[in-house]
Length: 206
Image 1 (spheres, rainbow, N blue to C red):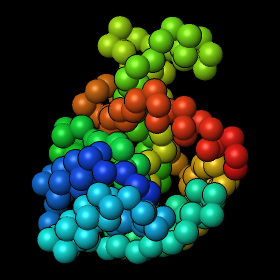
Image 2 (cartoon, rainbow, N blue to C red):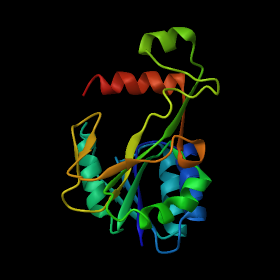
Image 3 (cartoon, rainbow, N blue to C red):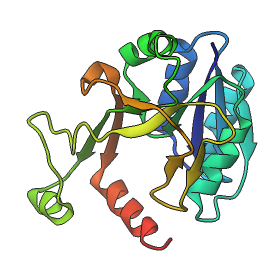
Image 4 (cartoon, rainbow, N blue to C red):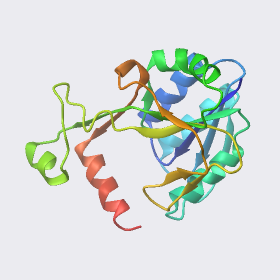
């Protein structure tokens, strides 16, 4: 079984390097890392992509986003050659146990097309005002809206596609299931309040 770890990038730096190094270390040899970059112009991002793609075998292309995340993710999907795709944002990071258990889970559930994966969201610098403004639920660990399930692991089939330019969703799958709402089956999504507000502002322009 081959898994394609697919990533969209645009001007991320430290988080991107951390994710790529993590995937190189924890993926199986037959798996692939597939990157589609929206013509990053941050010198640090360009350096990270140049170094990582030259040091390690990765599939890499560039394509303008054009404010269409669904279209960009479908292009990225078509670059993948694995039996399954695990889609990650450049500022996310899977739990080590999830990486270890992902193939046994897939192999023991051959009829499942899509897996919903719990996400641990944290935002450094949030205040109660932000929480009230956005209607967030924050638990005792500081995790926002946990388990915040995301459809991120799916069977690589032509009919399973992304829909919508923003707040994109997968369509075309049949059977689906949810991984347990536990940290070891999750992936992490840390942000700063500044980045959160910038992203909200950008999404409002699409």
